[in-house]
Length: 123
Image 1: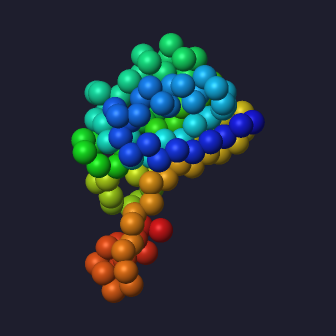
Image 2: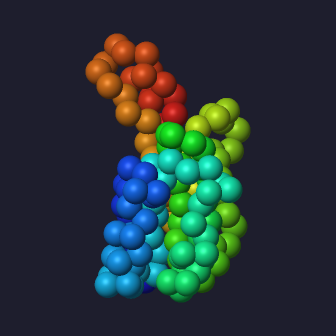
């Protein structure tokens, strides 16, 4: 199974590049981070035309993750169980018995920064 990961830093901006890469590389599963799209604006049809199923969770401007795959994900999970986080940073699914966890991990900044503490809590 060929699994790949790509921080696209805006799927809207890089959709054509992602589609071209999918056509060339032919991964079974691709995890995307920083899609920066609401669920309503996720380009499901473009990926379907390329032969990929899309599972995703997003929000405008920041964060957002997706799993693109040849076959639908099983046991899909869109959050860390029992952890309150409004940001869309986690998606996991199983493919032919392989669990794929795609994360956009919090940037911790420097030790002592409040974001560093948040990163440690998140991890």
